[in-house]
Length: 538
Image (cartoon, rainbow, N blue to C red; front, side):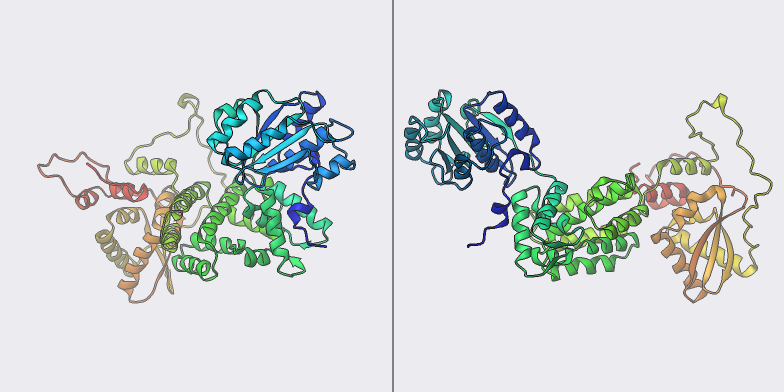
């Protein structure tokens, strides 16, 4: 017996078996129960979501010997003939192959004849939008006043191409894409019935690739089974369908968090070397960040159901180490790249730029913290607590038993000289970084590690100083002065608040100062420019 593909073997035979289209099937069942049967229906929606299948089920529901009934028996002669495509009263026509006026005229000639032995004569026209203008015009009169024994069912993926005169004579039902979870659950049921061994998460990968089409997912499952392997795994699906593995997305995210541009570029190279589709990879990376964002918002999100236990654990661990704002910025960058990949002749170059941008992207700075710190530097205290000032209670004192963090050791002649030299060199390269370091103090130096301490009130300065770029500048200058590689450790300690000269109004000048002159005169301006990635206009 010839092999029947899975999409045909597991085609739904009743309304209850249709997945993801309850808004259509329930309405049709209620219409049949209440004997409010229309003479023309228009089923529109993406490919493979059940349009033609529901049309066949509707034909059986109307003609079943127990009907019209919302639950056809699938056992009577009429139901079996429709299922096996042998009924002379249910005609399925391909609109793409019968586009001309003559084809529609032949169809309309048979409309006036009564059914052979069924209750209704049902005409299912698939891809009806392919009919010519003259063919549509020929249908108009019959659609407006058809014989009582005739029902037309039109199916299309492009409803906007159908004339409004046809639309107005039909009851339209819009079919939706099926969710990945519903597809994965259906595939799991099929695998269980077919006695196919499947790993957790493997079917979720097929469901994602199917893009909402149940028929596509079943065809992909057939393709994977043709490989001959006894068990379906994510690795097998990736090899057969040319999809990047989920582990690659985790590796790329780790390299981005570590600021490792080289590792990120190596992973992009791996994608192309394996022959994986670059657009699919970028789209998969977007889905990966979506999972991370959902886990960040709700660790128990149902979106992870269907993934393996190991993958669920990795998403929760990796999501915990990334801020929501950073995930949103990364998602925006990737979305832009996904759109550009469709029109680019050099997709790998775009992905490489994306990888470097993500790796070099600074972590998000909270605006509230920035405002607090700027006002502190300016010698002002601005309230950020929204509660009314007149009802504000004094800050509670720390309990006497709490031991304060020990202050850093007093600078020696050697460390003091090193500190002054380092400040001088940093000021020449990055004045705003020099302004940040003025709030700190040289700590102890052990082996190849130098400690720089900041007052507890200057946590913002410590965070800015230890960003990747600023740390490299400081470590480079210290290493140059001492003649050996040094690493910097930044801490908070019980130190007095440094006295910083408040900003004063600049005297009018005939010539507009340069950015460098402004930064040297007011280092805080440079810090704002760097923190907010800004540009000095005036």
